[in-house]
Image (cartoon, rainbow, N blue to C red; front, side):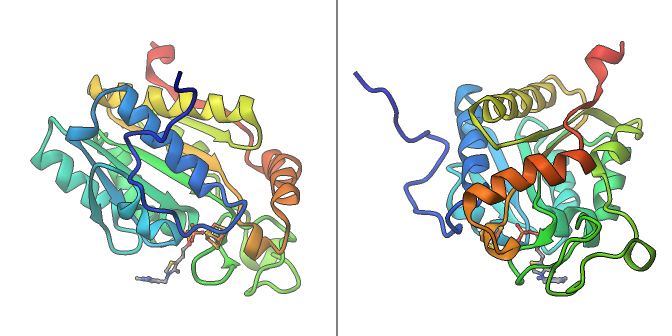
Length: 247
Ligand SMILES: Cc1ncc(C[n+]2csc(CCOP(=O)(O)OP(=O)(O)O)c2C)c(N)n1
Ligand code: SF4
């Protein structure tokens, strides 16, 4: 009896992610959901620029590669050209909340009918751990060596809360991947987002609190603890918008 096997939504390529990085868990969940919804053959994923740039090698569906920050613009074009396809972007916080914030907000505001998977690890992982818009107050990064300072750098930006205020969004939830229970919750949230897309309800975004043990200078276990102890108080978990519940 088969108890566990690789999801059909993943290629057989080994990922390049660092040990303890949650990008791998998140890829697996997205792949499982696409397979369970039986939409792999009509899905087009948009890889962004960041550590997940090579996600086009890992998802077993059609993929496109967007320039840094432009994933929501590219997804808009793809979905409008092929309205029967299932479209998702996979973006980090540097990509989505910094250089790509305009594309994200306007796609949400237009109610574009695709799904955004947003991995928030409070840093620019790929480029060596610089400060991101999501970096916590006091967090040391390579460009905030004494820690992020409120007066100088502002507050960490809360994309789920911002996007929930926008009329075009159908569903916005923030989740984390620190344990089996939360991984299951994340999978439910992602499945719901893709289901809403299939029902034509509009823009859906799942913000996933993620780890970057290498740039946080932590072992993988300490990194998971940091998500719970330091990130959740600033980025609370939960559903921020659900059009089906608001009715
Ligand atoms: C137009 C442009 N500006 C800047 C860069 C450099 N760059 C590449 S990845 C990246 C940040 C990635 O961070 P994030 O989106 O948070 O993803 P992570 O690597 O943490 O998963 C930056 C600034 C680029 N490739 N293109
Ligand atoms: S640098 Fe950080 S975000 Fe990038 S793969 Fe490594 S742990 Fe993950």
